[in-house]
Image (tube, rainbow, N blue to C red; front, side, top):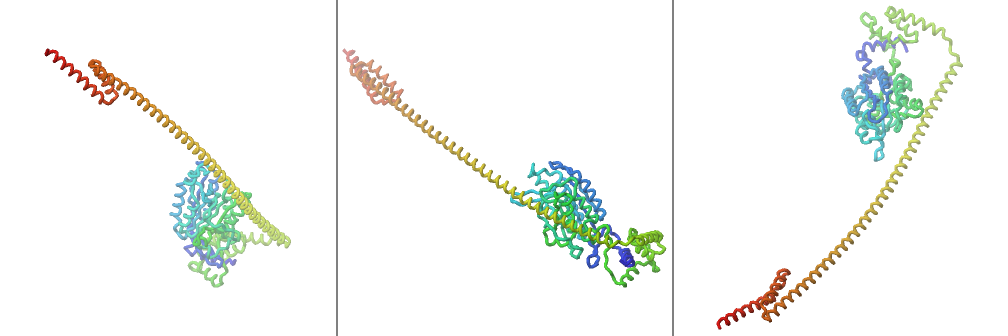
Length: 541
């Protein structure tokens, strides 16, 4: 790069007030060399769940991971909101407050990083649902209903993502689960373009469903490595969300020895999947294209102060840009512009040292160049082999999952068959019990009928006995009346009266007919009258 041009651009930055707050604003140059202010503020929400209280194993390494992530993000000028060991309420409030405070400004970029347990729950209707697990959520193997009431489903994360108005939002989960809110991506990461600045919601997880989160996180280590510059696959000085996802997929699968398979992609929403999250890497300061000589002169002139002299601020900015350079031409350019500057002596010393090292450095033999090219080819082949191995591993893992799914389905079918057999057995037992109850009821009815028959027979016997007794009493009654009438015929008043009293007692006791009794009574009265009449006649004589 022409040193005068570099100096002119630096001076332009100095004289542009909107560029003096680099820690807040993020500027990029697209492939056409056009400068864009991509973000005005950068905010990150870091959530670490390590001390679980309801059945999940603790993850003591999470605290160190969160601290390391916080450090690298601060180097990228993010303001940090950190939440440790949230329960259900604190986790939800953390998202709500973060979005309320920073998510409604379109020019912001937001990053959410969660480290902790994740879980995939198979719903009764067949679909899988992923969850991130706060510290008070119970283990679903022990209390599934309690887990569902406490854990946060990924669909709620999707709702949070849609509520954000910020241009770019990146959600990173150092936890393993399955979810359908984002479409998996395997595309080759593209360079910075005008589309980069379009809205996007991106997601990266450290593993797929049924994979366990290790306490010592390979994922967080590789995340930090990527933001330190290793993730820049096309070496343009920028790290996009897509590059980050691709880098983490390849390296985590490799370093975890195929036990973790990160997933990444964009939200399934046509309005929020066009752009790409962007980090400016530490070595990327400026990206420019050649401009005309007249533009160079114009730019240089704008950095001049009164009297045609460069301002002190321009000198400081120039020096900060070249002080770590290994190119002696940069220091010569500084001395040309500032021959009596504050750093002129140091610039001459470094320029001399660099000139001597360049002069004394032997030419690289052609053989060495070919060897370097061969090594580069071998490294590229090794990278391709690793990528192929990763692809094969993913395919094998998918096949394993399919086999596991088939085995699960077979188990479910066998369990369903056993349940049907058990239901049939219970139905048979219930039918046998019903038959036994019916038989018992039949026997009870027969016994009741026999009892009724015995009772009827007893009733008939009683009636017959009563009839016999009545006949005997009636016979006795008639006999007494007959004796009474005979006594009347014999004109025996005393006996007839005695028989009358006996007959009357029987009639009163057994409610017998009194017709003959009344006749006997009349005849006894006739005897009395006759005797009275006879006594009167006798007394007359």
